[in-house]
Image (cartoon, rainbow, N blue to C red; front, side, top):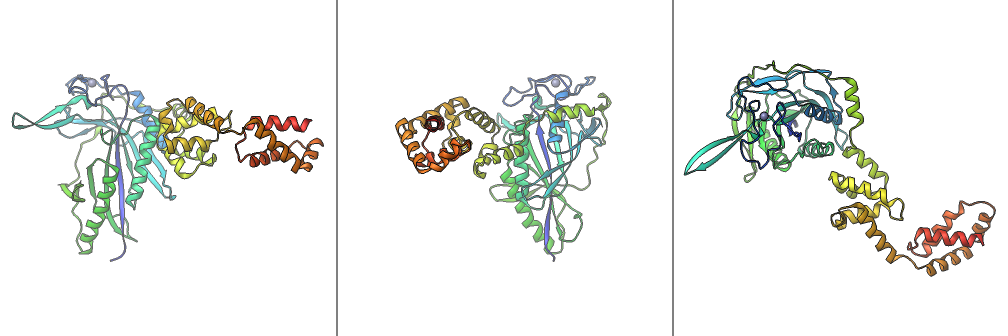
Length: 439
Ligand SMILES: [Zn+2]
């Protein structure tokens, strides 16, 4: 058998952090709330209730699409996706079928490989089932607080061939979402949820005619492990000449294996139909441009900016991996530019000593650094001594200065700092040097 290559695609759900739900005015925040307190006829699916779309959620989805170089549809609509489940009281979910808000996005991995993003659409979240034992009886309860919360779904093309690329992609997507400020994308709380499909193909063949879906996996690490376990399992089946059964599988983290959850005998028919209660949506090009121009710096832009400050890869990643830290650093270097404190020094105390945690305001950190520096500066006497030594050793530079070549000052300051082992306070060194040169 020829070399077998994994074919992996992803579906990522991200709950948006809008104030209100997708199609009603109920509060969208639902973590730790008393069950069934943020509900109304619309999100309970009562007959006759009329949904109306949340504009902010649509803008947020467009922001995300733009961050991933997507095309934004000028005409879009919502559709009903029918299925029955106790956490979906209407018997259908309002989602998007053939006209999602965003299509054809791209994402470039560090190794240069491009992952194509098929679509990003917007839908409503379902309620939540809670299974527990009450008075010795097993019961299932439904909490509709989450019902109708805006949920963004991103679908990639099956372009991944390596679980470690999947890991890199997902971590960066989570970071982009946080930088955009549209969700906390918290895996533990379920505001970011992952599904992957995986199959194996021979090197020179087209897409395989089967795929395994991996669902209900609640961490990046477990998804990576589940994909690796699937590669081994599918390889073994294919090498015996059989084909893996098309099914949905979960991951057992204790045994580090995947297990069958349900087999898919035929594709589900959701009977999609246009949502008759919500008019189609036209999206003005100018509005898209306005949203695009207002996008904040994304992680990759921050990396580029920090790279120009000659920071090490380790410092850059530690600063960029937390949006608040990156913003703190930005503010700190901005304050420090009037002082003799380098970006590298700031990054170093933030990363190695967590000084940003001790000083919640960047101004406080800079003040502290200046104090430390002051205590360590060469005295005025020492600076004068060093200036004298350097001027004696560089009489040619002194003559040049007197003949109008003022640029030699930079060279002389460098020599003085060398003499002072870098402990000269720049302003003081400049002041004393100028005085001496003017004498
Ligand atoms: Zn509601």
